Image 1 (tube, rainbow, N blue to C red):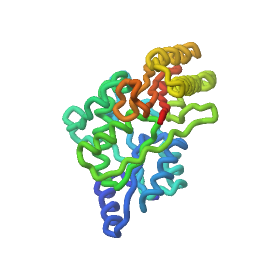
Image 2: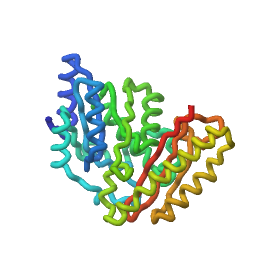
Image 3: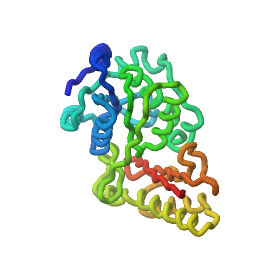
Image 4: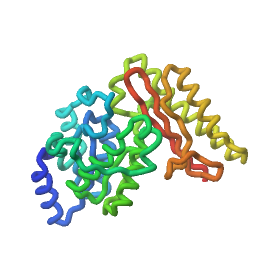
Length: 288
């Protein structure tokens, strides 16, 4: 695997591959990689001849009270993992390469509506930062396909809509969440959990599973489903386990609007604080 940090080096390699008629898949990350990230690389290999990954801790998507300086950086270990996974090229730019004018003067991309609620409400400006950096990286790498993990379900929807609205010739490939045996979704933020918190954290996913079962049972019996009431019960279970629920909602799987009785493709979106870690998770519920 070759590692480059400058834009011209990245473009020269991509150009050489294009001249050979090769296709390119892209996996953008913020580093501190785990098995979930590597599953994206594995999936990317199924869709293209070459796989490019990036590691960039994006300052634009961090809020005022979010400490970007303490975000874990494990470059050497990440490079080993990406090499073992067969990554062809790693792009590791510094902030002054990506934002040479500084954030205050940087043009940005915003995806309305889909960015507003849930994590968008809890982390104002977050999805503006996500959309901007992904758009910029897409312009630099110019991939045919790009892989994103479904643990960040709202993020995937934001990127899908951005690509569609801006007519980008890129296929977005959502990749299933990788979990520990306990059900806890793999996340770089799991490193903030103490041993006791690690034992408590799976309550989030277990509550989503319970909620999904209640929804399926109500649908099978053709009952009227109280999505809001069931979500409140699940949130109480999460809080009683020792976590603090940020949000928990049952939504239409594409629009992320609150679910209605006519919807058959649903997603349960949730976030909860466990100690210093803010955990997010989701569970799709297909009723037809």
